[in-house]
Length: 354
Ligand SMILES: NC(=O)c1ccc[n+]([C@@H]2O[C@H](COP(=O)([O-])OP(=O)(O)OC[C@H]3O[C@@H](n4cnc5c(N)ncnc54)[C@H](O)[C@@H]3O)[C@@H](O)[C@H]2O)c1
Image 1 (cartoon, protein in one colour):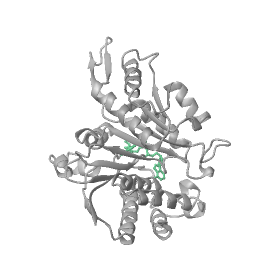
Image 2 (tube, rainbow, N blue to C red):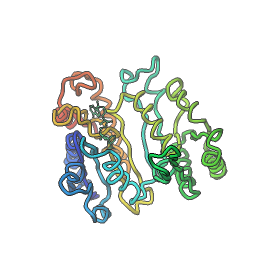
Image 3 (tube, helix red, strand yellow):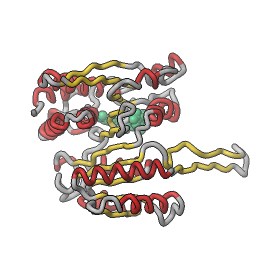
Image 4 (tube, rainbow, N blue to C red):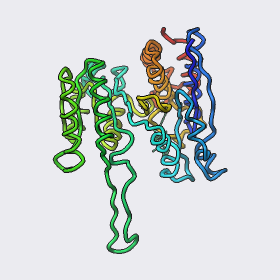
């Protein structure tokens, strides 16, 4: 019997609604498979907590989370709490403290009706973006000088350490080798003459250890164009924090939008828990109405199961999502249906393919 301890942070707005559906699916799997069991511990952290206590997460919150196998996060952010506080103090803090330096974002088209791209099908759009998640342009380094004066200067420094750059690129090569796919590096060496020249050098250097992996290297502007015009070029993509953040939104746009996009924050060494979350935010405009699409949060569950080594169930969850997408009427309104968030979760459990 394998037992997994999961910390649940539903967070704010629709985060709470969609995470409840993800847990429903995990429980359904537990019921079907006598070899798997979970325990869930819920934490009340988020913006509401901040408004009451002045902190997004308890002082010893990181310590409280340390012993879990995984963290399942809904979304954080709510009007009244500045976004740079809610995101930095909770989400980014967890990613940092737990050295979740790999961000895995699948760009997989599960149904041809979901892409706005003319004449592209599931076989054309099926790749994995591996985004550096711990440093780079989001390192938070910089300065704000002479604030409010005519000579005001703002510096936002990208931080690309050898350790940080090498480990993400190595992770990507390993993934490409393991899955027998090509690897594309996305950078911008022609304009960012330190950081991205360094990135390109490391990509080449590490690549010498992986002669079996076929590689490509694109500038980020060209890559953005290819994401839309020729997504079939990509199989595994590795890129920096900022470029990965932007490119994966294009990835979401070509595969069905934010209601489907998911991301895993991985600490590959398993020294700390990894965190699984839908990419979307707390959507205050629809929160509390019971109409949020839970599929991205359910897809996160599939990534979590893969991470636990339960790939059979990870695949089953994805196949079930694929089957559900065939019947639009039974989906939420953002997908053209009329179902509620919990209807989608219930139907998923009914259909669960194993
Ligand atoms: N990972 C996170 O926790 C995260 C990510 C992004 C934004 N945020 C925060 O969320 C708040 C709102 O941000 P935003 O409006 O820019 O982005 P958002 O993703 O919350 O919403 C953007 C639009 O997409 C819709 N949408 C999003 N998810 C949906 C779903 N599952 N089903 C149906 N419709 C969905 C919303 O209704 C809204 O119209 C902000 O406070 C922001 O900082 C948090």
